[in-house]
Length: 88
Image 1 (tube, rainbow, N blue to C red):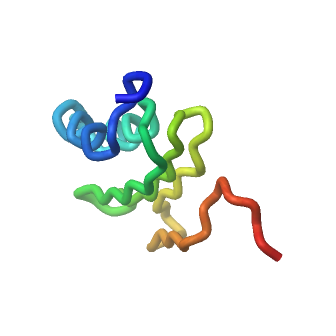
Image 2: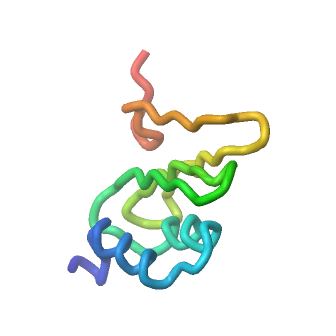
């Protein structure tokens, strides 16, 4: 595709085929050029394994990765995009 970027579905499939741990998968989801922005929502097998990965077309412009921890038992994502100008 455009400049050898992947669709989000192609990228997700390569992560599923290559990542061996939850941490490897979360790291891999934040890499590789994509043709459009996307939110990946991932859950692991054990406690505190849950993340929302906000992806831009280029990894250098990615949004934050929100991850569960010992004090937060949920991760929420709204329809506000991190890259958009805030309307006030």
